Amino acid sequence: MSLSKTDVKILEHLQQDARITNQQLADTIGLSASPTWRKVRKLEEDQVIQGYRAVLNRRKIGLNVMVFVRVTIDSHSETEARKFEAEVMALENVVSCYSIGGDADFLLQVVSADMDAYAEFAMSVIRRLPGIKEMQSMFVLKEVKGVTGLPLS
Image 1 (cartoon, rainbow, N blue to C red):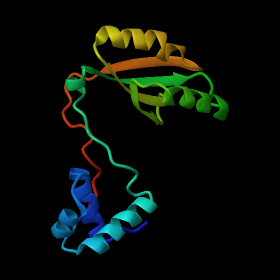
Image 2 (cartoon, rainbow, N blue to C red):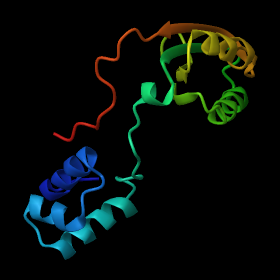
Image 3 (cartoon, helix red, strand yellow):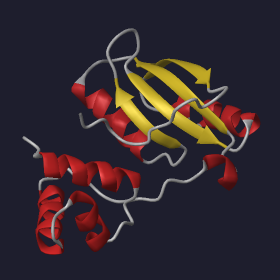
């Protein structure tokens, strides 16, 4: 899909502030309100914009520990991978999961209240997922740059 310069401006502004009104967005990008609204709706219909959400400060809501967990599964069959993925989708503390190449099969991003809570989650939940062969936890010491938006240039 090809994005126009106006589409890119819209996306940049919505990534910074999804609560901006249509009129404010229109004024910012130099269009009138109606074409701006139509362009935003088109970007939504085309699934370029997949939703709007609030960005929370995890520490302010008691999620003080972030861990990346590399997981290797026993079997690389489609069935086993799908079973693992389905189980992970149901885990609230797993905030993202990626199928990766290299020496592991999946990378999980996990949040928890503290190290004890993570240890319990890792041992009683992650280790019990179907097909787990190996897991390695990498603890975040300092979040230098989190996801703030995707580059559009």
